[in-house]
Amino acid sequence: MTEHKTVLKGLEGVYVTESGVSLIDTENGALYYAGYDLRELVEHSSFEEVMFLLIHKRLPLRQEFSEFRELIRRSMELEPIHIEAIHRYARIVDVLTLLVILISLKGTGRQGGDPRDVNSAVDIVAKMGSFLSTIVRIKEGGDYVPPRSDFSYAENLLNMMNGGNYEDEHVEILDDLLIIHADHGISASTFAALVAASTLSDMYSSVAAAILALKGPLHGGASEASYEQALNIGDPAKVPAWLEATLSQKKKVMGFGHRVYKIYDPRAVVLKEIIAKYLDRMDGKVRLVYEITKALEDYGQKYLAPRGIFPNLDLWTPILYRMIGLPSDTFTALFAVSRSAGWTAHILEYWRDNRLIRPLHLYVGEYPRKYIPMELRGDS
Ligand SMILES: CC(C)(COP(=O)(O)OP(=O)(O)OC[C@H]1O[C@@H](n2cnc3c(N)ncnc32)[C@H](O)[C@@H]1OP(=O)(O)O)[C@@H](O)C(=O)NCCC(=O)NCCS
Image (cartoon, rainbow, N blue to C red; front, side, top):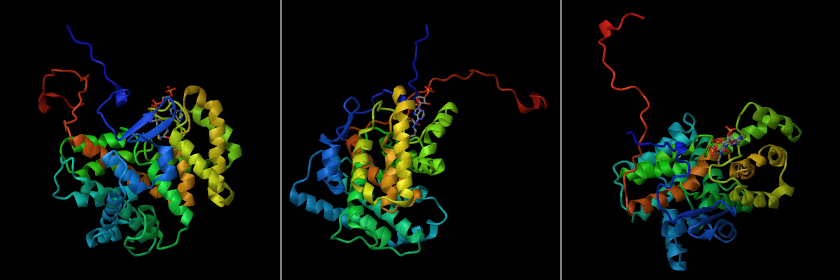
């Protein structure tokens, strides 16, 4: 008698690990980092504090936090080999691929498997930010700007990217964006990080695997795709017809839908509230994208909500990314910078009780088949 086996496509509904890093409350629409409500963290905390929280599962005390921030700032310094690599590749390789190259370079010769390796976790998040800012800076013809010890992580990112050319509110917006993207359970990229880490590959290589998984438009690439979608629609008045045509062709609307939320993504709710604070100062292309996004949200109520498909954070992020001057080809990379805090926290946690991740597949081909030598197979 053959045993009945079920394939759970996309691992939907499968618990693959235990974790205390984040909790997604899909009923009430809330996200918690180590038990703390995302909303509260966005309002009161900083990305550095959230990094500490995700790794240690508790808020830092004052002295240890100042030491932690110091470690982040020191780790943000780039070595000449990285700056050279950025000069060489920034104009010929896409930003995310270059991040993979740079973070993989840092992993050379390292070992994985140590759940106490907080220094590597901090080094990865710090370097990811410096890499991204320096890529943007060098692509735009500038030179490497070293991190400043009196700046927060978010302000250093902007300063290293723009050499002092940013506003105070941009620092606040970027810090909020970093917090909002820092973790989200076992997303596809976090799972990719865990799969690599479970082989006891080093943390840098495991993060490189995660970045590559983040790249696609169903995951991290959705913000850039959602921005392009808004620009292609071009006019809020065209949204209803565009939506009808897109859905009748069975195409996906970027910035809508989620594997775990069948309600409005709580991160998108927080993003909308941040955007609302800056509405009166929003003009030009960003304003147009906002108007189109609003129309998509409104008409999504009629066309998508009845099927349990609601806006996700990627519907709204392009507006804030553009407000702080991020080029659209860096949207996913900024997501990677922020999510590296979650990836590394998950890796450290997983290594406490590591087990190789090795699922099964159900073979559906023929077997056994008789091998026929080439000379006996005929010509056509
Ligand atoms: C994220 C996503 C992959 C999750 O979806 P999922 O749980 O795998 O669900 P599926 O892709 O299998 O979709 C289930 C049904 O809803 C529809 N659907 C899901 N998201 C949709 C979207 N954004 N636009 C239109 N239809 C959508 C599918 O077409 C499918 O319809 P069907 O049953 O008639 O075939 C999906 O919602 C999506 O592709 N969204 C757009 C990309 C995006 O914004 N990603 C960022 C996520 S934070």
